[in-house]
Image (cartoon, rainbow, N blue to C red; front, top):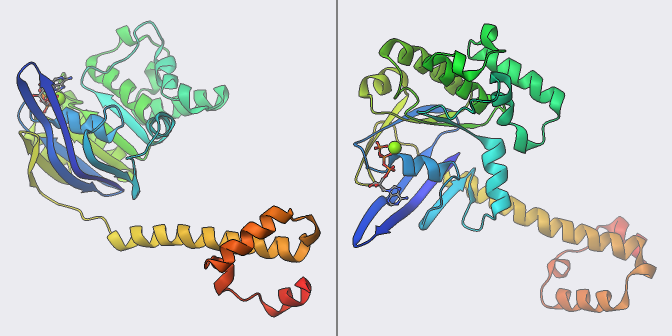
Length: 294
Ligand SMILES: Nc1ncnc2c1ncn2[C@@H]1O[C@H](COP(=O)(O)OP(=O)(O)OP(=O)(O)O)[C@@H](O)[C@H]1O
Ligand SMILES: [Mg+2]
């Protein structure tokens, strides 16, 4: 689903070099609840931000469903962030002068969802996180736990495949933390959830997999995953095949049906291509087409 390959991210400040990601390689399943633990400054947030497309890596590669992001343009990152990823932060990041509904709808502003549909999805998300009776309040009228629920509703309103949470219970008391963890665990049944936490007890109790970070490196992974390399290769091959097939088909079509309209230059170019071993050179037309072509 998601794979980091030899990811490096260094910061140079004055004479100090910080290796925030020091050759990190890790793969995540389509559906699992992963907790990231580690001391302050070990690179947890940096990794989450790289995974979510909020920050860029210096070298290595992030593969999304087997696709390299090395040549991703800004528009590709935007599409990924807006449609595939939901973020939850320790400080909720709600906009206080907007209503709760508007805050949740904000998460869909950039993904082109029509207004009525946005409202419906926001309501559904708020019901899902247990805020049915608080929908029409302002964020300032809510408790910390309720604010985090709004932030979670905002993150899931678009039904993202990946949910990233950076210390979502860092500002909450222990009872409220348990409630929020249950909610996030529930959401992880339908998607990949990667959560940074400072609380090993919560990680152990709720997550399927715990990864320990130190000095920009993964020190331990309780349930490593290896992406199926063969499946990836197959996908790539298939894409290539269908391109060739398309080329063959389009040529067959032009040859048989539209011969009179094919520009002479194109015909010459194509003939040249065939002579150099293009797809037409190895393919004999089916009998029916050969008849048709005459
Ligand atoms: N913009 C930046 N410029 C310089 N150094 C940075 C920058 N962002 C992060 N760092 C450094 O990279 C290292 C990793 O930071 P990161 O925020 O990923 O740590 P963390 O594990 O999330 O820590 P915490 O648990 O305190 O949130 C730290 O040493 C930090 O100071
Ligand atoms: Mg952090």
